[in-house]
Amino acid sequence: MPGPLSHIRVLDLSRIMAGPWCGQILADLGADVIKVERLGAGDDTRRWGPPFLKDSAGNTTKEAGYYLSVNRGKRSVELDLKTEEGRDAVRALARESDILLENFKTGTLGRMGLGYDDLKEVNPRLIYASVTGFGLTGPQANDAAYDFMIQGMGGLMSVTGGPDTEPGGGPQKVGVPIIDIMSGMYTAIGALAALANRDQTGKGDHIDIAMLDVSVAMLANQAMNYLISGQTPARRGNRHPNIQPQNVYPVQDGFIVLAVGNDSQFVRFCEVIGQPALSDDPKFATNAARVENLEELEALLIAALADRTITTWCEAFAAAGVPSGPINTIDRVFEEPQVRHRQMLREIPHPLSGTVKQVVSPMNFRNAPLSFDKAPPLLGEHTKEVLQALGLGEMQT
Image (cartoon, rainbow, N blue to C red; front, side, top):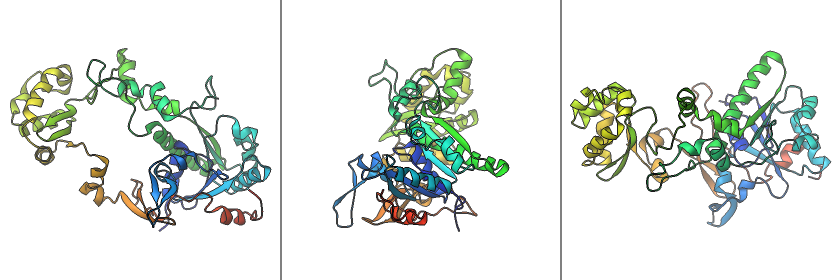
């Protein structure tokens, strides 16, 4: 069966991560996503390696792992937007598209005659989504941005990492480009909301997503902790600021993540570790008390957890309904029985390597199941077929 967005066409003019991540989400949902790339060069991420994909003979290709992680399910068209022919092709594609994604510097496409105000004349129903570092307005609207710097500017790094007083402490970025990813997610949500609104009004819209805005929005409970207390949150390592015990604890053969979420779970936790009296102690009986007396509690827990293995503890906690787990390396993630059962790793046919492994969408639909059968495209792989369908087969791109 076709995916839930199989009736939608997306014109993806974006590159790097945030915009393409949105495009890949929409492609996974069944949309026909046409990725427009620079003639002869393509998306910057095609060169962001090693590692690069190996072909079926074991030779290194030009397909970087970074590019392969964010462009599944799309069709690639090479165009030179510096030429009138290239811009005309974009206009022709926009005329037949439902959503346009772009993350050029503010004003760039407008100067080419490809801004929202230009293209809504071509297609009034077009949903035009702009993803930039700082948004389309404001004193930094024209500035360039990357995920790393926005993690710093937006406050995320101020609450990520160990305390300055501890060895190895200091600000840390998240290990994946989380602002890019979440910007792509918010863009996808915005585009789908605009589609729903278009069904009611018949009109398209212009969506303005700023990575800095996304980073601020993601501060969530940490922002609210500050806003109601006036106290600036500090880096606490793996300790949760509001719920305890939640931390990484040393055990006999490594470390486990413990995430006790409420008082009843704490009662069961104490029974598993053989110290049921802890849950009756006024200093630890409630979550608020545990947060206030965390140093004393953690010393007791570290001693109690030290003499059993990761597997032993995790099995015992699971049986008691207490959330815990190992700290898997990436290779071990894909060996987790639950991850394997959910088929999060698939192999998709690829024209160079035979197949390419892909970490697929976590969304599952009973009535419109997703299919993963189109690998990230080669540069310009679909230029001819797309342009010919527009009646532009003879143009020089």
